[in-house]
Amino acid sequence: MSGLQLLWFVLIGVLFSGFFFLEGFDFGVGMSVQTLAHNEEEKDQIVSTIGPVWDGNEVWLLTAGGAMFASFPYWYATLFSGFYLVLFIVLVGLIIRGVSFEFRHSVKAKHKNIWNWTMTIGSFLVPFFFGVIFIDMIQGMPIDANGNMSASFFDYINLFSVVGGVALTLLCYLHGLNYITLKTEGPIRERARNYAKALYWVLYAGLVAFAILLYLQTDFFENHFALTLLLVVLIVALTVIANVSVMKRKEMVAFLASGLTLVALVALIFTGMFPRVMISSITSANDLLIANSSSSPYTLRIMSFVSLTILPFVLAYTGWTYYVFRKRIKHNESVGY
Image (cartoon, rainbow, N blue to C red):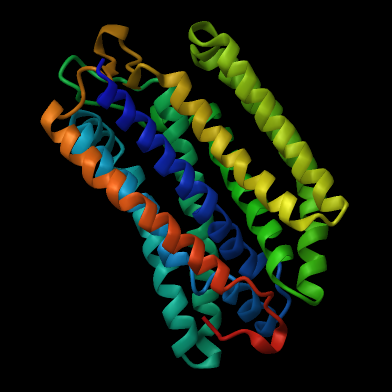
């Protein structure tokens, strides 16, 4: 394994971390439209918190997929062909969620609730099925010697993948609630805080189930015991910090802790898979490795030069965007995204 191969494996992990940190609260806000708000004014207020930034946050997913395609084409081919139907559901969720921002703003009032529901449903679908995909990847899928995946329904949907999907959905929902408390004023802010207080206890139970299944269904503790244990403890610690911060009304700390919980979860998945990118449940000889799944060294060098040149500008622009739209949203300031 070369240094460039390792670099791009890490960069893809960083891109997915950025996606779940930023788009995670977008999903949580979208879920809150029909589950938290009591009237149309509050729904507009909630949506306005992410109206200027949600589409920019989704670029992290496109970049992660593009980076995977260019740097690890064999990983991309096996993952996207093997999970074709699941990724199709993810795509449907992203589409109905994305168009909801435009249509709920332009349709007549009597039809607006349809698009509120599509936004909420899409926001639930995407993190749940991303959780299913990542859990399936780490517990292994039936991949043959040619990198082809021939999986049955229960290879995709099983106890561990459902627990992982629910856990990721709940993490995103709580991340969104923390963002709402940080970005709003009025009754919706207090309601979001109260929801978060209750749901963190549900999350604790989910994390216990996740940790047990991680031990039983994967080889993470066998191959990377110290690092896996450290990251599991970190996930729990960040969850506790977020919970305590919600109760103490430290809204920024709660938001950062819930976001970093998602980052730690991605780190757990990528470090546990290392040095593999896809795990075969048939035999370890069929595993796709970082060393044999990447593009040529020349391609990786060109990609590294271009990416590391552009990345500082992208991060600076992202930071500036959030700085410009940093103020809280009141009832009468929502713009009806």
